[in-house]
Image (cartoon, rainbow, N blue to C red):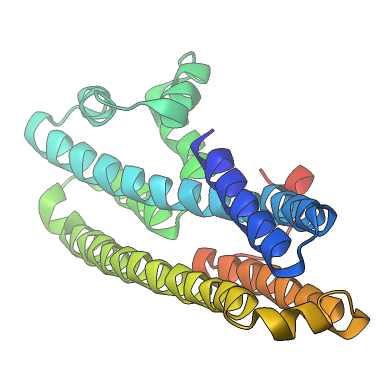
Amino acid sequence: MKRTMSFALLSIYSGAIGTIVTNSVMFGIVIFAVFFLASLLIIGPLTKRSEAKGRKRHEVFHFINDFIISLTITSSIEQAFEDATLEVKGEEKEVLESVSHLTIPERLEYLALYFDEDIYRVFLSIVKVYQEEGGNLLDIASPLLDEAALNEEKHNAIDTHKKKSIIQYISMWFLSSLILCFLRYGLTSFYDMVANSLPYLLTASAYFLIAIISFCVYARTYCDAKLVLKKEAK
């Protein structure tokens, strides 16, 4: 809902700029419709998939840490699983509830499909080795925990950089739209001469076309994903 509201505000703003620049309500409506549809069908699925991937990355990090620490202390795989899933919520909780009839080892295996992370598969291998051969679990899992912490720290830094870049990106397009409005009202006499000419309308259309393509390409880069239609997103 929050995402859709953001897309609607962006589309309304773009439509308003289109109306101001061309002095045509119909042109503004078309711009609004194009931006809103592109946001829902392309940018929306990309951001949704990216958010889900980031959330699962955080979940698997905490799950592995909590499970290994609990298993080291209790030597009970059942207790370790309970401790690691004590505060789960959202989709992860729904997935766990759907497989509550399975044994703990089966549930651990099933979670590999949900997390879909290489680090989780390594974690499963370590747990199996510990169950079969014993030993000091913390020593065995120490390299994995260090790698998981490093990976989490790296992605947190990347997320921070991304948030700064999107502010800069939006600011750039916002300033460009203000320049258009300034030209529209600052050069009134010139505008009256070209407002209804085909070259001017084509130029205005090209600006908004470049803008929406730029938004889609930026979303793809920001989310590190391929452009897909909404019906294909999972």
